[in-house]
Length: 209
Image (cartoon, rainbow, N blue to C red; front, side, top):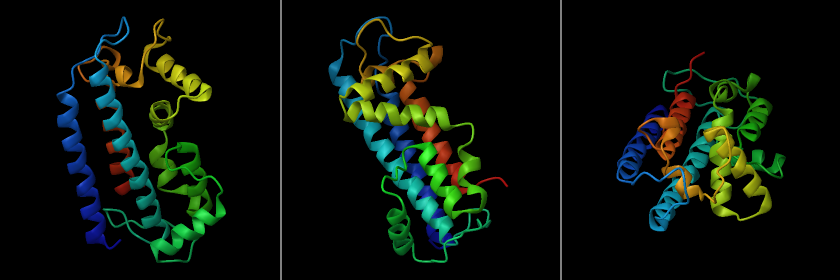
């Protein structure tokens, strides 16, 4: 992306998240001490989170391809790339060819590919540091919404422990969890996580050295 295109891309991300925030603020908070009695709100929360997280994955990939093809941050800083390709489509083909399973949702996978193609993985590895657990929790919530498997259920239970320091004694859906208040605060878990995703993209786009 040119500097102008990159700036426009980041602005689009910010504006998109403003719209998401408005939608979340209209959501009714879920009860935390028993199973949800508002299935419609739970389904809407899950659908919105799936949409937001899918866009986050695409945003991470676009930023990575921007840096690996010689693009500069919003502040004009360039990463040291090992890939001598300036076309993002060609770069994507080469990188995909080197990884059988490449997930832009999984922080460990993103860091691994960044270390392979960028010197010391900068800025991706540095900007994800300190956010990896919560980003992983976002991925696990997404997986539980999309897949009703034993593995996704176990991972979702781990998210509950991270948030509530224990598992619920009743069945809790991802939608109900997303509509609960984040650790006693006024914001919902959904808003906390979507803000995390926005801040991660902004940090990647304008990293500190």
